[in-house]
Image (cartoon, rainbow, N blue to C red):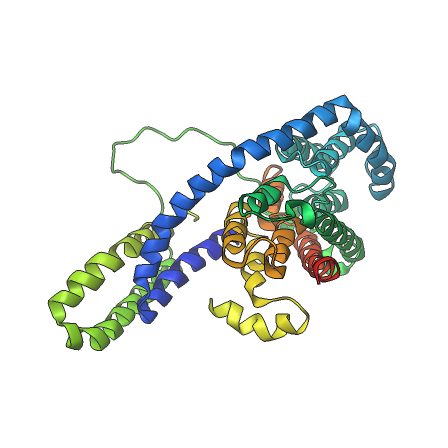
Length: 397
């Protein structure tokens, strides 16, 4: 699903730009985004090192042990099918404790270990158990106690008068997200539509990873693209040609054919077409790789959710780095202490990168039948957005 979404975003951006005459904006932003990303990383480094170091010291000084002791009785009740002394229980506790304290890098190994150990208790390999589903619902909605360090540093760099103002709204949003995901997960797990499939219906696990055979440069043994992929690429090419023809008919009579080719096609079209070309090669080679906001604006604005925050809400479940970039740009555009700026910063911490988390954690144990996990996580995301919006209205007016 992630592959289809990202391919769709790239293709849609270039095709829409071809029809609207905005290839120059695509070329400009593709270059500027890389420069802004490096500047953003450099500006965040010092503050994040400070706060992550302090949290690490506090964790090793006993804070982590306190959180672990508090989580153990809760998880033993939520996961009655997992023995209290099983390695899966220990790994889940450590993973969730590290997430709560904002130690994301330390949490991931424990999370992967938990999935492996839970799979050892799985009677139907390839299909997620109730324990796996519940663990991922909690993990993907990510309740945090500690302040969102990266977001606060972005706000401080933008000269916010109160960089920490979004801390409590973020805590409330993540709490609502996690509680909703857990509730929906428990309600759905017993429904017939989400029962584990028999082993015979489950696709076989992928074969063990083997090193590829040596081959000459330029020789590719990958299977040819399917007719559907070829048809999709052909449709994209036709759309681009139609867009170019439209611009030609509108601009070439006014400026001349050669100036149009020189100043428009050769200058502004080449980079977007190059980016799209790499994606197309990936599609054919079987490698995975503003309009929506306007459509949703009347509905979201009616419930107090401004349209300016929609890009963050739509991107957050897909890409953590992409959402972070959207947040940084929004803070610069709208201001860190405006309602929109504060809401977008709160949305950044209100939930996790749902699709990425599910892909990594389910992939490590070869689970193909995810059952009700995605629906529970998406319900948690929506609850997190609603709670973030309500909290921002309550705290910031």
